[in-house]
Image (cartoon, rainbow, N blue to C red; front, side):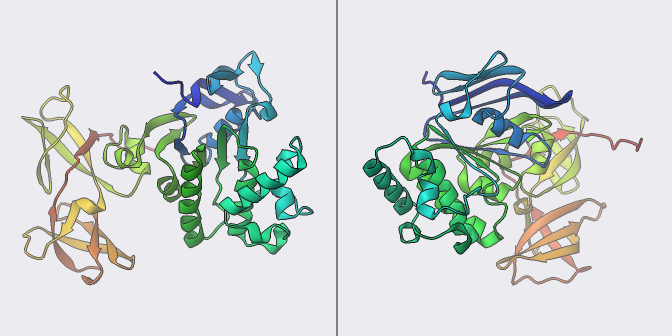
Length: 355
């Protein structure tokens, strides 16, 4: 069994008696790009700071390339971890040129080697022509590239990215995300980013960990997180969808208002168990010939498609992606049918009364 490049096991951390990380664990193989994805306040940036060595841990262990760098009684300082970091606000030095920013962490190298490394790194990010420019003369996307180059220039074993695209507009962050992934893969760099934006995560990462309340709820590929969520929180957080009530039938089937599904019902669920079934917008197909009608409650135009929110005859709500030449009015009824490949169901959770 190969040694993972990053091995984080059972890490705990807190501030002033408040626990931020609880049994935080993940493994990242060499050359892999991972992502910790979660809502604000879940502890993802704190986890990154612990990996970087900026924060001490109260329990657990962090190892990089087989070498322990964090434990309750021992912390290797950040500058000795062979880790590069790209910060959310870029943190470029305004009085230094692009080349000087990129070379900031290379002072220990011979001047000829240092100049060559700076040139190679700028060439890698397509900014060799901007070497003499200053940060204020660059666009946001260019500043982010320089921040990436500065972190990569010392050739770290692990690259950490903290919400790297949050200050950019939607189109630029998507384009830059794909560029960053290509650069990291071409260079064989192991990296982990934290973000609250699943579009960033899906564009860059090989594997993603969904984080809630200081721990990873599920670690897997984007496909598995979307189609095989392990918990209701993951199902709710990743992608879009709606839960529809159902009842477990014999032979591991589930009855819904939309029909009977053959699902992966856990064997310990007895017949008659009440469940909630996750339906994604791509599970509900528009079909004029279908006898099942649903009323359009809301519609969102997405260019090639509309995202319709629909009310079923029994009152349940589902979402459906429909080609945009089917332009139906709010209040109109349309024919739909269910076509589902991955049945995802959880035991029904009764609504909790307000405190």
